[in-house]
Length: 319
Image (cartoon, rainbow, N blue to C red; front, side, top):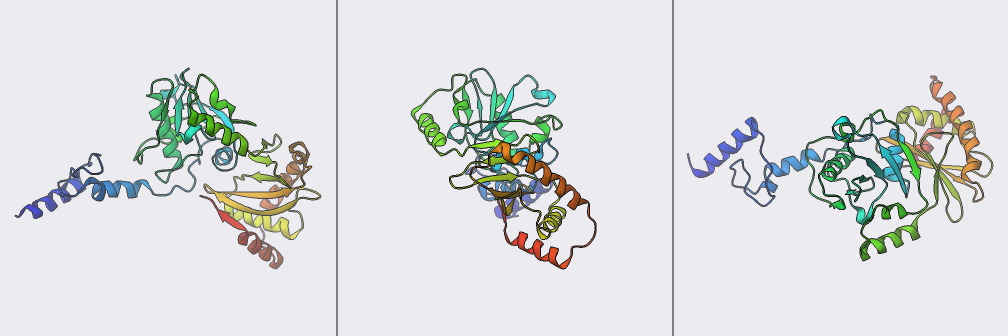
């Protein structure tokens, strides 16, 4: 048997009978193929780790708020309840951290997790959990730097208590970055200044779950992450649209929806003078109407089907 044949045979044997260890991407693959790791088993590992998880926060309490913090809320934090093996650590989720760090261990030992970071693996839950595991091993005052694909490992559902409610605190500024002696470098100072200048005033409604009011220049908006299965929700929204009951009161307008992490997020335009307090009661009333529409099990009428097609034409997908 020639050298190439022996290498190919070794590669086949390792691929089918053993776990190939991770090495540097430019190093020879341990399988013996003679190729660099990144174009051999490393390529397969990367491909498998990029399989998209459509609902990465499914199974966590307040899944809709997790989606909102990841996609639509500028500045917010939420104290998390860790699983027993991490119970000694205080862990706080934040929409974003300085320099877009995946995580930070503060001087007092508190672990901060950044939610609005790039997903490396196709599973946001896996990426955030990987940052948490790395952060608890750091010295206080150290950030987790963006790195390679995390590969197989625990997800948020494994490192947190999945039944613990998420208590969201929305902030007007990003000054929570500065707590507990975060070293104020010129880079962090500039990032804080830019972030505070660009922040959109946002508030979470108290009367319904995962609905967020925000203040824009000309009109305010309401973005509401809903937990219902997409097809059932679209049918219900179509029934309401056909009945002229899709608004939130005078001067409001349903403008469409988008998908984010497997859930649908309807969006309304609101008059510029409509505050978060003003929209609380209309949101409660809409939730009641939506519940009634979801309970209808009859086929859509022709008018409702046209309304549904119109809703679909205005729907976007973020993740």
